[in-house]
Image (cartoon, rainbow, N blue to C red; front, side, top):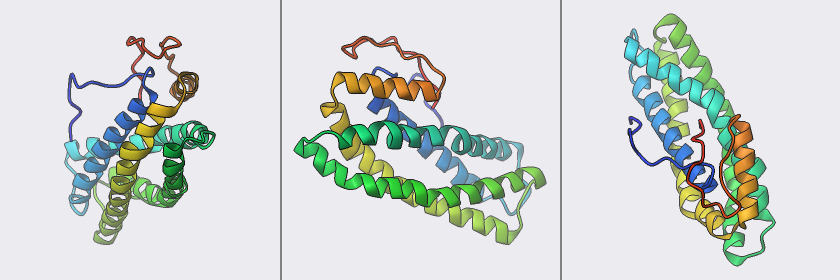
Length: 197
């Protein structure tokens, strides 16, 4: 799934929108891993090698920042709100955090086998099958996980987190990316720096 040139990308003035944008990247790079997984038992073409290297780099370097955005910045703020809508969303947070933990060994396996494929140009049949299985499990988990966050958790946070809390959330997200957020106290400025996710 290619990144669309000219597609609207959220900035730090909309931290929950930015979190959702990160989900589009997760989906894109998972798609790359799924496509490459079908090719790993034979010599990889240069385009497949580039796609694999990019996806591995994303899940090694950028995806952990997204997890920290949720677990260290967003979820604790939601847990401090007593509104009924937030309480309903909170019931899902423990499961979402368990998903993050459950995915770690699978990401480690994908990284290990992916690096092996990059260094040797292919994997054995057994290794290729292990890679496909790990990627398939990750893809199934992320589909459910992302749907829950995009449809339940992020909309509630966007509506009910006070502006000061959203600004603090955005600031923490920016610091993880060594970026400088640009927004006013009302969260209305549209000139925010576009971060790397």
